[in-house]
Image 1: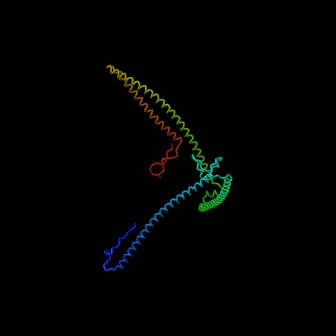
Image 2: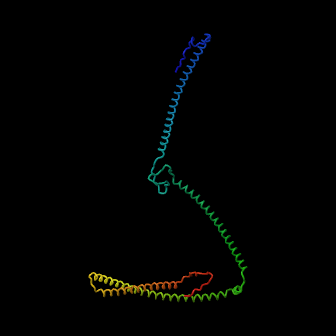
Image 3: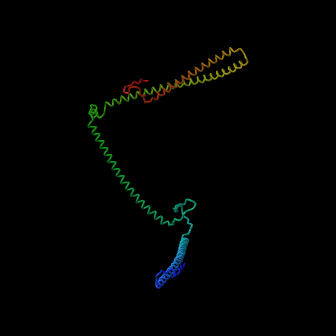
Length: 334
């Protein structure tokens, strides 16, 4: 944009007393300055347009450079894919079970990391692994045997220490042992005659107790058989009494029905029926008392049978008597 300065009027703008020569020089200098500013402004506008054009060119250059880089990257990927397609082909191979070491689980197999190796390469690697493993096993076996020898020596040392402590204790015991008459006889004769006589007496007593125990057991068994026989007889009697009771109940029920029928008909001959009913009730009562007595007797017999069984197979646990625990109690023989 061009800026135009208004010309100076010498009659209006010139100061009073100023010479025309200096006024002309002032006007000339002013016009020169305005022309310079106009030139500078014109060159500034040109510079702005050039910078704007440069920015546009730079943006286009960046866009084309990005496009070129993208095309070069696609070209590189295309060449790599073409190279892989040329040498990385899917070829079906027939392999035995055990030669495939990839994960075969799932519907699809991922073969991106799979490598096809010759069988001899795998066998050579396995031989090397076996060799190193065998050396490791030999080393561990040697270490184990060495430690086992150390443990054996430690165990022997501990055993000898314990034997030495035992000998020391036995030596102290022999030193503190009192020499009695029995000990002197034992050392002189080589056997303890007093203990031998006591052993013979204890064996005789044990044999006597054993025979006595067998006799008591046989007696208890006979008593148990007798009691079992009595129990069976009582059960048969109870069954007969139970049948009699049921029959009496039936007769009583029949008599009750007859009496009720007679009461309804208004008959007056009720004396013999009442007497008969009383007799049946008395008989029923006696039978019930006999059944209760026999039941109590069976309970007592069962308790006696249990007591005899316990005596046949005695228990060695004694009940501790109440009272002073230091006072000896006498248990009567059964």
